[in-house]
Image (cartoon, rainbow over all chains, first blue to last red; front, side, top):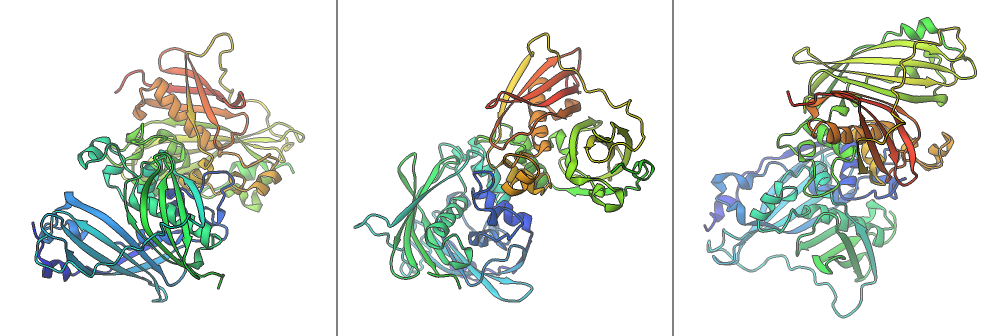
Length: 291
Length: 291
């Protein structure tokens, strides 16, 4: 059913307040596979001493209620897909604190009744204690069942092109565990059963339960930190990508980066076991040196 | 230094109140390795739907403050060892709730100035909502630096003998992950650095960081549930054992059980990779059939 543009575009999304602890921050890091050895290879993300938050944790903070599920919004939830994820970091994410999320529907594009609509949802995360803008999180959501409402088709953010004429400058393989989805769903507060239930996954059109897209996103973020930021989370400024194909828990994710001038790189992620592109159109921006 | 028997025996330990959530219960199960596949092999312990608490979680609930660290108690903490763990279950542990722990020093045995003291610490866990006694948790703590205070040496609980004249009736191998300690420390609320820090582990006399004893205990509990209780946590009544040797994260734990009459079995746990006995003198009591 075509969506009601004015209604959805102007949906009154209340601010969301999210307090999180150091334990939550360590758990998020474990949820995106940040420890695979003992002692942990990246203690600053999983142990109390000198704890730093992984910047990608911003995408699971202060997300608020899933208002798109409100029947009044008229969204065909069964045909909804998370298409792209965008993140800009203005300050290092505190390892504990309270963030206030201020949400808005940035735009809704109409790809036609047969293709669907693309909704861009944006939230600004402010530190409640200081008022500082910490991060901006956005995502594009593909509403395959809601196109043809007579809206504009053009103007969508253009996916960042990954070079095809040269080999990547660097590459890193990071493993996930078979139980990664069971852990990530607690760490990232996403209990969607398609990630852990065979019947629900099949009903959604998957062969078996798939890893959370945002878990793969977190793994890619860890790789980008290591490959481009000397593993210093304060240096990451931007991390955008498009979800190309599902990942299964237990697969190895190979992140490949192409430097494109100071503080800027393209990246993509492949599943090693299936030699399949899973995260595409990656764009990372970062400080070349510590501040 | 010999301890002050009257002072420690009569230490006024305040009641402890511990509220825990379903998320905590699922995380505890993941902390003791309850998911190694996707979909999880034991969904009832790691997913919301029909969630049940692993009975061994009782040992990390309402433990209260670590009063033995109070300098006034005169305990030589560097020479303290967790010797044995005891658990009796009176009711199934709720998957979420608030428990009140009522603590007492049951006895302190004197093994001599050269050997040390053995302190038996007991706590009863009551459901705050109903007042029901849910579980009794006890442990023996070996205080190697505090013997010779002139107390009694005899009367200690006798470790349960594991049959040596016959092969076990059943056996089950369960894996741990290299990152098991990093996860268990959050799940079981035990941040002791000897489990994740190489230097701290060496200082305590270990070659490398060791897995939490109570994590191995939880793995053994899972094996006992599967081997003797048809994986039904409501059927476990008692789980006692002695810590014989440290486990390293990532090792495989082989639990062997010997049935000893209705609802009763001995068990022990070996590390498969090193063919080493790590948990000894296991005693499990259980209902032979569901209630």
